[in-house]
Image 1 (cartoon, helix red, strand yellow):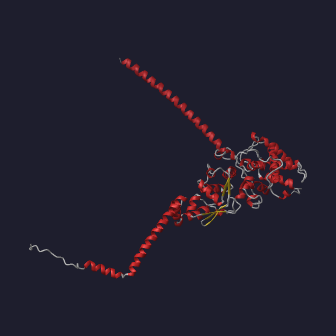
Image 2 (spheres, rainbow, N blue to C red; image 1 turned 45 degrees about the vertical axis):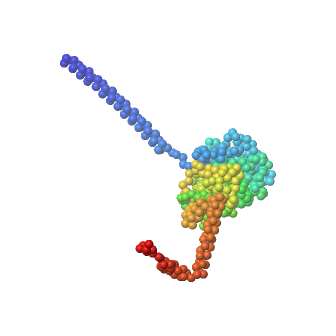
Image 3 (cartoon, rainbow, N blue to C red; image 1 turned 90 degrees about the vertical axis):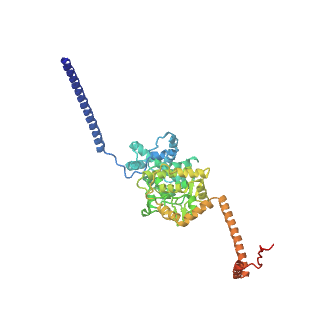
Length: 488
């Protein structure tokens, strides 16, 4: 029996020893694996830490539209018929326009009025310009050097010849009638831009021996003449005379600069509040006026008077403002002025009634099916746009003038009265009728009081008082006869 117990203890000890060795082996393997994983992770992080990340060029000005903006309205950012620059080069639906571009390219270099321009000079100038032009694009351009130079030359000549042929007119001999409005919209889109330095260089080459009237015009002047119909502006207004417009890096930047007011940096502050709706402003007594200023974004205020330049609303105007906002979202050097303007209008317009008031005032014009559609379009323009109110050029208008007046006692009382008693014609008529009845009641009461006063005037007031006391305290004139109970 004792031997059997000893044998069992030996077996148990042997099993425990085996389990211990297995556990130690597993632990060593886990430690080795953990060490290996740690080493791989460390090596990967060190590699990424020491990697050279290419710095964004300070001269970048042509960007891809952020995905969150594109998902709201993708067609607003993609060209419809023509590709300019590298981003949409080769897109299948744009290839039909390549032949038209070649016609403009040839016409630009072989104009009879100006004499033939040597193609070698153009190519040589574009070769020198290629590194600078390529650095203007935010995304890495996959085109080779020769392909990029060819793209700059053909696209640049096409654009300049188009601007010179059309000028302030509405047609070109090389274009079908429907093409021109679509080309205007395509050439203003952010992803469809050429650097302005390319256009400047090409125009300088052609203008060297030119006797044409357009030789004295810069690409900026030609572009403004071409793009002004986008906002229903006169083609002879807003010549590129300001420094900001002369320094524009492409057409979208140029057109954006042409609609901005002249605002000093010290006038910009954080706009903590949104403007109230047109209905609320009118109820409080704010006067809305159509401004005669030709710059669409030049909103001003004088006390409780709000002056707004006219705005033409349709689907195409939405495309223009969407691309302006996309440029401001990407480009660090420009202020978010178009963004602030759209948020301003988004606050003004909350319903079809607000649009109707603006239509009546001549501030808004639209070619949409209804006022509700116009309101929906305005409200949709700011969707997925991030803006914290910083550096707003509308700070003084919204926060200092209109909001201060809106919070005054008079404005609050007026707004409450108008909202509850004159909100529409039915309520207004009921209110007027009630006031009229009250007026008649007051007249009737006044007439009664006047009649009483007249009676009091004809008879002495104190005589009424004395008679009252006499009647109160005098004995009856007829003596009271008591029956004698002792008599039968």
